[in-house]
Amino acid sequence: MSRKVQNRHKFLLPVALILSLAGTIATAEEQPEEEIPPWYQFEVLIFERISPGAGSTEFWPEDPGTPSRLNAIPLTEARTQEIGLQALIETAAPPAPEPFRPLAESEWQLSEQHQHLSRSRNYKPLLHVAWRQQVIEPDQSQQLLLELPRPSNSQSAIDEPLRLEGTIRVGVKRYLHLATDLLLRQWETEEGIKGDSLEFRPAFRAFRMQSQRRMRSGEIHYLDHPIIGVLFLASRYELPTEPEPVEDGTPVDREVESQSKQEPASTSS
Image 1: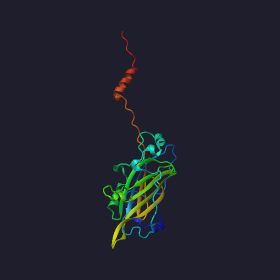
Image 2 (image 1 turned 45 degrees about the vertical axis):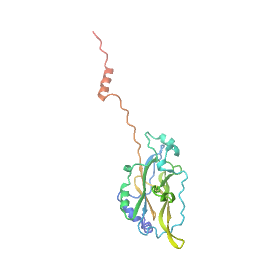
Image 3 (image 1 turned 90 degrees about the vertical axis):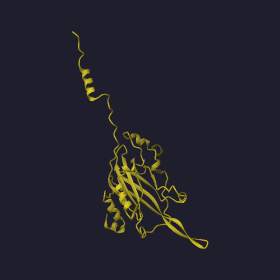
């Protein structure tokens, strides 16, 4: 990172130190052309900067717009038939995993970074998810919907907008390409007048981050923003091979049977 970029984005330094614990920041990697789209495992960790004064020196529009959900599918509801990738899956060596299905936490590779962020006073993890998919050209790849669910145990869940929502898309065209469009809402208080007294009504302030990045697999990538932070990891995934069929009988039994077939039949004198 150049000195000019460091001066303009001083808030990057703490996160860069976190990344140095388990990975490096990278930019691009050329990918070989293959007839069968390769499988990758992707992982994204989205967090919020909660340090005092975060983003206070930036200009923020009152209405930054909302990420488009057009043709985007939630990771939790993805099905191969719905996204039109069945033909691609059939070309892969079986057994092929189901694409876009969230992986268990035991398969996360950014757990250490998640723990560091959770213990920090300046950052708060919001969403952490990993999945596998075949990677095709960026303009043909599936757009995925990411969102932080509303609380399910309060009446406010009906009225409150989503705290975090957005889309993510990964494709390959010589390089891995990542495109994200995220919107984060933070609570604020709004002063109003009701009758002869003042009242404070909760309100949200929205921050949007739109980013595109060429990437290298196997290294942690950090998408910078004064309020929103994203750690992203792409790893090549090798499909499991089918076990070889087991023949009946033990190896010794098969050897005795083979020898008996080769010996000539005995004749009585």
